[in-house]
Length: 387
Ligand SMILES: [Zn+2]
Ligand SMILES: [Zn+2]
Image (cartoon, rainbow, N blue to C red):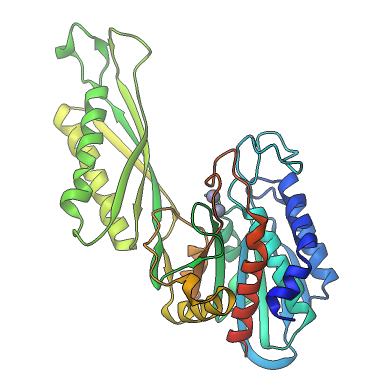
């Protein structure tokens, strides 16, 4: 029986786990249902080591191959859900009001469990596999929490791999690229302090709304005029607020929030420096003051060239060369796995999930049809890495 057939024969069971995970979602660092299910299953599969509570709700399982080797491969899945009220109408819809698996991390967790099941049944590989189930991928820093809790010292890996389901593109196609694949992201908050007053007496005020408006417009020149035209960057203002719900009061304060996206940390540093200069410079021009805070919540995700070559070989074995895409355009979204690949060479692939609602939409549901494909891909990856 092939790996894919072996997994497909068991699909109903894996899908059952996925639906249980879907019905019992947890926000970042609150994934107790998923963590307990993962821990229980890994013990059932006879794992050599199972460690819970790493970086909060993170779980790590270690599986030893039949043949000795010093080599270790890490496989990572995320377990957290989102603060969204589910509208799928599925029989296994979320039982937790206002919380749902709208990004498919329930599917990623079930996929890695299916991989663990298959590899534990047939340990014909040389070395160790570290299964990493991380909390809080959605911007709350679960990967760093595990790393700061000693993940990579306690379980050193030579290479590390992960995947994300990818709705809206053809099912069971696998997409990746060497080098940059997901963007880094820095949240920013700018606070303007002016001087309020009567709308009929503008000369007695320092208009915070005017400062904010000019800041939003001028900040776009950072990408247009400061970045190398061959580089990419995004400046998005997502919340701009000034005023007191009146028509005749010039506001003394304004607050602006948004995010910067970039594929290179030095580009990110330049964008942050320029945004601070723009905010403070424009405020100064009008006689106001600006303060800015940054929260760097994702680094760019860079795929290692050698790890990507292995990922592509495993992908071709799993779905055939005509369904493997080795030069997908980098995504401007971000991914917490980047903190792991910053420290250990690794690769991240997208597995096409076919038509359906996009992630973070209340109608989104993970496509169970891709679970055997993704699990089979991971199994082949391990068998190539640890041949
Ligand atoms: Zn997400
Ligand atoms: Zn996700």
